[in-house]
Image (cartoon, rainbow, N blue to C red; front, side, top):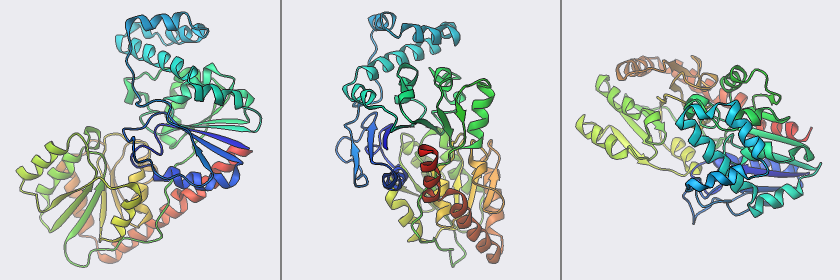
Length: 406
C-alpha cells in the first residue's frame, strides 16, 4: 500500500520533528511513502532528514503566496471546473464582503495552480485502490479534493489543527471548507474542541469527522526540580501577538520571590519584547534563549532544572510545546483556549482564563511556587504520565496506521 503525504513545508520548515517521528513508524506499514511539501517554508538550503525509504518530492512552490493580477479572474471563468468555483461563490455568498471575495479568488487560483502542477498531475494518475492520501493541513494542497477523483484511492484523511481549522482565525471564512467537508473522506481535527467547531458550523457535512490526536516523542529523560529557592520557568513559542509573551514578562513585576524565566523562540516582536524586559529591569531574570531546533528543545529541558512551563496564548490548537513539556515531566500553567484543556488540568498544573492578565498569571505562578515539594513532585509525575498515556506519538501513530489501512 502507498501513502501520499501532503504537508505545508516539512521537512523544510522550522520545527515539526514530530512528523519525522510519525513517518518513521508509518514507513514500516506502507510499501512506499511520498512526501509532497507545498513550499520551502523559507528554508531553501537545510531540509531536515527524513526517515529511510521515505521519498521526498521537491516542494510544489517556492513560497506559500503568489501574485494575483486582475485578468487572472478569466482563468477561473473559463476553467472546466467553473461550476465548482461558482458554487462556492454563491453558496458561501463571497460577493457580500470584499475580504471573502479576495480569499475566494486567491484560493480558486491556487487550486488551478495545483491542478496543472506536474507533481500533482503525476500523483492524480497514480491514485488507485492501494493508495492512501494524507493531508497536513486543512488549507493548501487539500483544496484540490473537490476537483479530483480521490475516490479511486483506498482512503483520504485531512488533519486539522488550529489556523487551518478554526474559521474565527480566518475572518470567519476558509474557502472550499464546505466543499471539502462534503466529500466522503475523513476529516481529522486534533482536538475535541476542533471537532465541536466543525460540527457546529457544518452539521450536515458528509465527511467522517473524528478526532485524531497529534503527539510528540519523548527523549526518555526527565527535567529536574530546582534544588534552591529559585523558581525556574520556561516557555516556548514564536514571538508573535497571539502568544502574548508580554504578559509573561509583565507578570514578573508582581512576583516577590527568586525567579528565572527562559523563553525559547524568535519572531517579529523580539525587539519590542526585549525593550520591555529592559524597561522593567528584568534583563537578568527573563532570558531569551533564541530559536532551538525542535530536536534540541527536549535536550534543553532535561539538561537544565525547570519547575514550570507557561503558555499564555490567546488561541491554540493542541499545543505541541505543552506536549513536549509534559514528556519531560514539567508542570504546566496555560490559558484555557482551543484544545489546551485536553492537555492540562489540576493534576498536571493549572488552566487559567483565556483573558489572563499579568497580575492573575503572577498569582497562579505564586500559588505553584508555594506548594510543598512533595506536591510538586506528584504533579511532575502526573505530567509525565499524562504524556505517556495520551500524547505519546508512537502509540498515536499505531492508531493512525489502523485508521489509514482498515
